Every structure is written in structure tokens, then in C-alpha cells.
Amino acid sequence: MTPGRTEAEVVLRLDGITKRFGALTANDAVSLTLRRGEVVALLGENGAGKTTLMNILFGHYVADAGEVEVFGQPLPPGNPRAALASGVGMVHQHFTLAGNLTVLDNIRLGTEGLWSRSYGGAREKVERLSRDFGLAVHPDAKVGRLSVGERQRVEILKALYRDARVLILDEPTAVLTPQESEALFATLRKATALGLSVIFISHKLHEVMAIADRCVVLRHGRVVGEVDTHATDKGALAALMVGGELSLPRAEAREPGAVLLRLEGVSTPGRGAAPGLQAVTLELRAGQITGLAGVSGNGQAALAEIVGGLALPASGRILVKDTPVTRWTPGEALARGVARIPEDRHHQGSIADFDLTENAVLEAYRTRFSQRGWMNWRAARGFAEEIISRYDVRCPGPSTRIRLLSGGNMQKLILGRAMAGGPKAVGPTIILANQPVRGLDVGAIAYVQGQLIAARDRGAAVLLISEDLDEIMGLSDVIHVMSEGRLSPAFARGTMAARDLGLWMAGQKFEDAHAA
Image 1 (cartoon, rainbow, N blue to C red):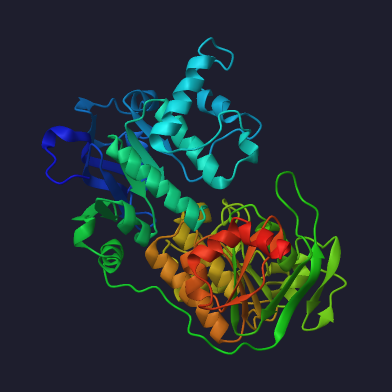
Image 2: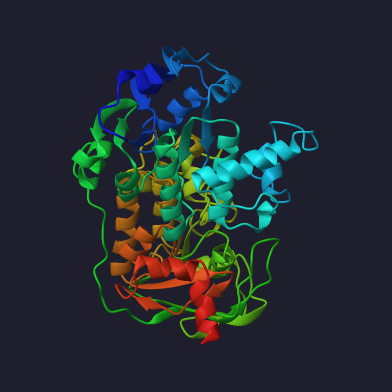
């Protein structure tokens, strides 16, 4: 943003927004302005009020107090169509595209009939927007065949096609390679130079520092700081978000122990567009964090299912402590000390309408909390209370429905359940941590990562599957990359730059290695 912009250039103003849900105040007199050609980062812990504020802006919620102005005009409350018509667009973290349709049809979907007479005009407009904003994507390409970065371009083109002049980006780099993130930032710089204004929601503070002009920080529903990016740093922003000093943990190098689990030449069939594993060989060693990087949908889910006992290989074999496994089920994996932190805490890691006690004992109720078919609810409740206390799960108590918890507190309960170990409660020997900090704030991230490092230092083998390269490079002792079901060689800590990892993630290094 160019210094010295005037008040007349304010394109969005939220003034004194307050929203309550019963006794909970989600937004407390929040005020925020956005100027033409500016990128404002909206920061805060999980539960700080960011999502509620954006839902009010888009008309999904009606504020109890305050008002919203777009380009100087009041925005009618509770009217999503009015928000879109006023020039506000949003690109969600999880894309909403039809894979069987072309780029052009996806962009037009919901705005006009697919067979309307304006088809030629629509193509011209999309091609012009692609050129003007540097969003290279072919209008006739099937979306299902596009890379993740290309799909994000389509989402941005959708908003621009509807004449958005204010664009909200929610965790836009969560599933991008470093190269795709750089391309996105180049697009944003070009777009803001042409007058587009952007609200950038992210937990990645180094990206905030790279792209934002100003940062607005929410904590407990209130604005606790508003700073120019050039006048602050990542540490100061993190301190504003959590209310104190915070440093993310980094694992110190150490010698690994014995191989606790080994996959030898494991292959699995693909599922739809998702590739299967292609002759994957992987070792998980005691006292070592093995990082697995890769763009989402390249075989990580299939690998996690194999390690967690949810699937069997079509070929190849699994060995636990050098012993080939003949029977491999979720129960057998748990019995052999495998602990799971699933990728999707809502659908794979918990049951929404169960309370915290029931969710805490989900994986061990038959072996640790029941006898002759009768549940020992006193022991189960005590176990849940121990997790709540030890892992700082902020909730009213063990009878709380888990769906009422924030993402960070839900993840802490799942983490505590996993760290408690198998049937004999001796602690896990192998920890499958699949996207363990996705969508968490900096405070929760630091806590979860610290617990993984502590488990490694106690001798556990940790498989860390993550799309966040900062997390992979900061925590992992060795790093593999997965692309289209193929697994790269292992790279020791500090031996590979993020850019080279990005080339492996994009598949280029696999092709180079094959050609050699």
C-alpha cells in the first residue's frame, strides 16, 4: 500500500461490531478498516472471533451491535446476496469447485445459465482477468485435472468474475507448495496495484510479514492490536495473539534408536483421483521424528491408513520390530503401541455428540475401561479429567459435548488420548501425527509440537505428516516427500532447502531422479 492514503479511500469499515451467543461474547465492539489497494492481515487464536466477524460481514450472522459499510454505503445485515453485490468476495481454505466441469463453467456456475448466450463474453472476461491479474489457467481445462495451486487461481477468478473489489482469503496457503505460495503472493501484489483490497487470514506469521501492509489482532473477541507490518516482527505478533511471549519449539538433533516399524515395497490401489502407494519403503525409528511433506492428495492418506491399521497393502509387507505382521487391524495396531492423531479431528478423531469422557476412551474402552462387558465410568471419567488437566483442555468439564470445544482444545484432548498409549497404558511407541496442527493458532501449535518432541525424547517413533514446511523442517530428524504415491529418499535435518523440497513436492525431482 502506498503511504499517505486518505480517509476517502476506505473501502470497508466495520464499526463497533458486537456479537453474543448466550453468555459468550464472540465479538466485542470490533472496529476495522480496509483501504483501496491494501492487504490487512486478520490474526488471532482459535476462538478469537475471526470467523464470527467474517460471517457478519457476509450476512450469515446478524450483529447485536455495530454496522458494516462497503464503499461508503451501509451493508444490510443478514443478507449474503447484498455482500456479494457490494463487491465483497471470499476464497475459502477448502475449495468449492466441481471437478467434472471446466474452469469456465465453474466460474460461471451460480451467476448465469451454463448455456446462456453470454458464453463468448464470459470467456473473454475470464481471459482478460487471467491476463490482468497473472492467474494463468486454461478456461477449457477440467478442474479435476488441475493442481491445487491452479484450483486456487480458479477460486480467485470466480470472485473477480463477480466484480469483487474486496477479497477475503482464509488460510490461502494451507495446501500450497512454496512455489505456489510465491505465485499467489505475486498475484496479490499485482491485484492490489490494480486497486483490489484484501483481508488475509493466516496462522503463518512469516507469510503475513511478507504480504500484509497492516495487521489487526483479535484476542477473546476484542481488537488488542493494530500495527503496520514494517514496524513489527513475528515475535511481537505472536505475543499479541496469545497475550505473552511465545516461541515455537525446535527439536534438537539426536541419535535414533532401533527400527520400530518398517514398510517394505508397500503398494495400494488408488481411489478415484487419489493415487495409491507405489512400492513405498519407510522406516520409523525410536527417538526420531520422521517428517512426511507433500501437497494434499498425493498418497499421504493411504500411507496413514497403512500405518494406523485401517488398510492392508496390496503388495509388500509390514514389519513391527523386525517381525512381519500377518494380521494388521486398528485394534492390532493399538495393541502394538501405535497411537493415532488423525488428519480430520471432527470426522475421524471424535464423535461430535459424545462428551469428553466418551471421546477420551474411544480407542481403549474395551481393553482398559470395561470388564465382562460393563463399563467402569468412574475410571473413564477420571481418565478424561487427567487429560483435561495435564493437556490444558479448556472446557466446562468432562461431560461437555466435544463439538462445543474450539479446534485447539479438541486437538489437545485427542493428543492426550493418543499419548496415554495402548491397552496397558505404557505410552505409545509409534505416534502417527497426521496434520496435527492444521488450523490451530500459534499457542496451540507450540503446545502440540512440544508434546511431539517430548514423546520423541522419551523414545517414541513419530511419523509427522504435514503440508506446512516450517513444521516439517523445524521438527523432523529426517524428511521424506510424497508425490503421486511415490516416496522420496530420506533427507537428514538441515540438508535440503525449502525450495528443493517444493520441487520434490511438485514431482519434478522424482522425474529427474527417474531420468538419471
